[in-house]
Image (cartoon, each protein chain N blue to C red):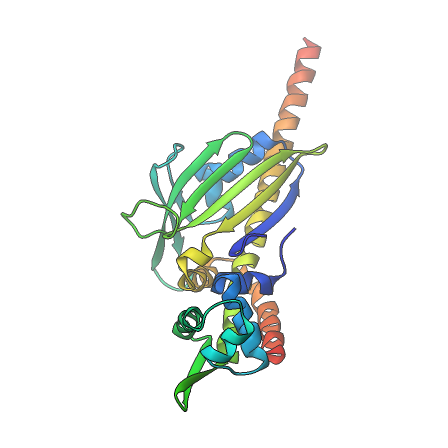
Length: 154
Length: 123
């Protein structure tokens, strides 16, 4: 595997056309990820995700730019570059969804890369987001266990 | 499928050489000189990597004689593991929601088609 990349696969019982819509259209992205999502369909269009804090009125804004959009097989974007900057290698994370038709639906391969180029702070930033996005609390105890194990091993 | 979480951690910290250095330092503290003897890179290169690890708090240096002796910061290492694990977990959650949404939409479309077909057949 390439160092600095998160890789996931998931089988979805829906056609690649439907899955492509869900991963690439702002109105769907708002359902599975951020509280607000605005971005253009064309590569390079500036856009952003907004995350509302559940505790107060604060909002975190993450720039978001489509890199490639090839329905229904490939959708990729860069995010969390600094507002106003053009997204590129070294200032953002690249997320790629590859969709492959299967007998019962679609195999989705997701990769997120750029952690190495961006340095450690980004992982911290994501962890901060996760704290504020609904639903992540479930993972915290598991992470604690894992971290404790690592500490013991070290 | 996905790589083990700790692999992701190491990779996020830096390149494979820094990971090898961390592995060595987890076993025993070391200096740029002692590490370079066990790695296929120069002492100068090792010193640069150590500076990167030091900056993120994963190792700490202590002056011993003419050299700095480095050891791993266990607490920071554990925090780093947890942080990257949470990035992976975040994607697990997002992908589950993508699956749920897509399958609901797909099912709704199928039902529409079926009823449209039935409608056609009736006419």
